[in-house]
Amino acid sequence: SNTFFIGLFLGNKFAGFYSAAEKIFIALTLLYQPLIDALYPLMSRRKNVQLFKRIFSFAITVNAVLCITLFIISPALIKLLYGDGFDV
Image (cartoon, rainbow, N blue to C red; front, side):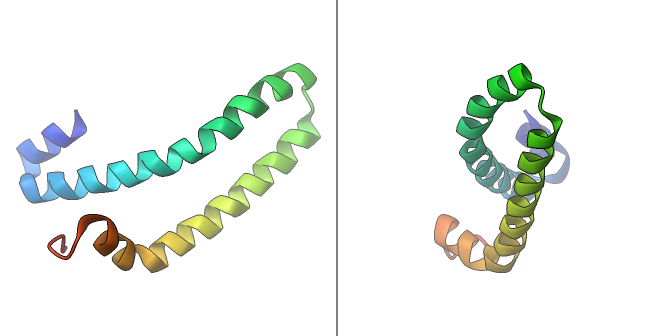
């Protein structure tokens, strides 16, 4: 796994950082999975390019807002999820 190789080459500290970030990324990715599962069959049947563009634009906007928000609140989020001992 990636965490193993990061730990091997960069040490346990960086492996811990990577593992923590990966867990948050996977949790956020799983939020989109039901939407993808519902929309993919519909979009592949209809082949509606306009619908795809609207959904894609909406997803880009939501992702941008989410990324900016997470960037701003990340110190508090890390402290909440991993405790005070998890400092960079």
